[in-house]
Image 1: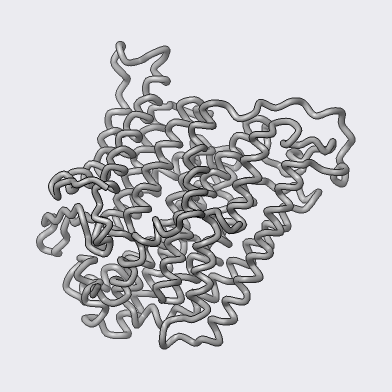
Image 2: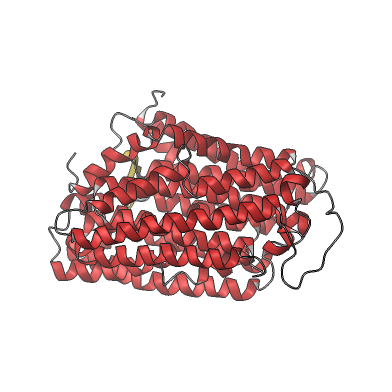
Length: 532
């Protein structure tokens, strides 16, 4: 780690949040003639790589300058009065909970910009695409950095419009319907969430998240806490997404361009679960305790439902779409995150935060790989990908097949890879929940979640067998075909975009203490009401 002055740390965090907006504004005008390269489109895509690369470098420097001996303390803080009448402040800061998500967001956005430079999505002006990508990055980074409830809401909402247009303008079939479903679900959930945030802020006399967490709900009656948790929780659950508020997700993923799916799964879903940890758990603990068993029940139903939906899509002859299958798998994986949060224990919450980061790395890689397959085959239909000759990916594009198999086994939670630790710790937390929660109920939830891990392994191994090894015989109604055509294997730009995700998946799996050492002290302090 390196020694960086507090003022420089403060500047770095402010730069990380604001720079994408400045980059978006400068992406819209035509590039000067001397910077256009071979075409104006190439210039603006290069601009996107440059801006997101600068933000990633700033995020890495911020992480290196972060005081790892005090991860529970808010660092790089800025606190400026904004709306004095409501005591709304521009309050920024990072601790061990938000720092990993901040770096993950910067990394995935840079990789998406790099991938798009070499493989631009088919659609309208690249200038608008890059500008929307940067606005989306700014809103996501701000969500993880702001420490004021109203600023959190503004940042939370800021990502909706760019994602809507990325789906509606650069998406595939049924993109308009999927984009409308996405925006309507998330906006309706956000309206309810805003009412809950206002209820908390007006009753407590402040919107400052640090002060509210330190107060630990003592300034709010139980009825206010219960009402606030219900309202805020609905908005967060839609974004997570929690069953049964998940139905927008498969459509959005199926229609979205590759980079849209990567960012939607890799960082946007984390905004909901982060809100549960940062806002609901410390600010309204009594209300959370009331709803924790219900949250856990919805979580395990989501785990089983997501897995069964994936099994149905994966079977031979079902005509399942691989992007849709991975979207449903996210419902199950985020169920483990919600189960860990519902346990209200340090072990469970640490597991939820670890699973958040692991899911971002692994599912981001999966959507990159499926996007590459769709580019090569022209479809993500599982029966088509499996083929009828038995060759499939291992015989046609072995490196691509190997990467898909790696991502699949990481997603099913193979020990030694990132997907294992978060889900295991979440179930450990549910096995022995916080005082005041029904242990028999949570033991039941844990048993159901364990069964869900078996279903997860089943559908992912079926996908690997079918897509990587091919079908042993044609699907029902399919005709025998001749030898399958050769496919282009992994290209250089794809290797550059995917290698960091592979490496971090292995590192997080082999050395989980790197991440848990950051989150655990911050979680302990959060659950103790701001007391270390």
